[in-house]
Image (tube, rainbow, N blue to C red; front, side, top):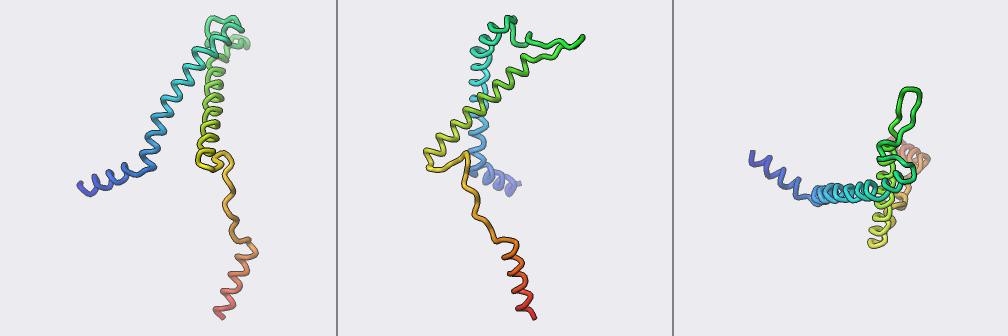
Length: 128
């Protein structure tokens, strides 16, 4: 049992685990800020434009069925805002680190198929 506890302590103390935990906590806080921005600023404007009492009241009627467009629209707006702000954050972080985090450079190309086959052929010739 002591060995398991020591392994767990070593696992939990790794930098990447701590970084991940911080990212999850900040992500939750960031999500609540964006949700408030959408719910308290963008949606009231959308409601004023459409004349509906609430965003969830925005719906399309097809026969006897209603499609709840308002809630979906709110989720899409949340997604776009979070995506854009994450993009800006990565751009700023990359600039501070002197790296391009959005479009990282391609890894160096390995040997071509022809080179690999030539190496295999050379090895086979050595064995004979």
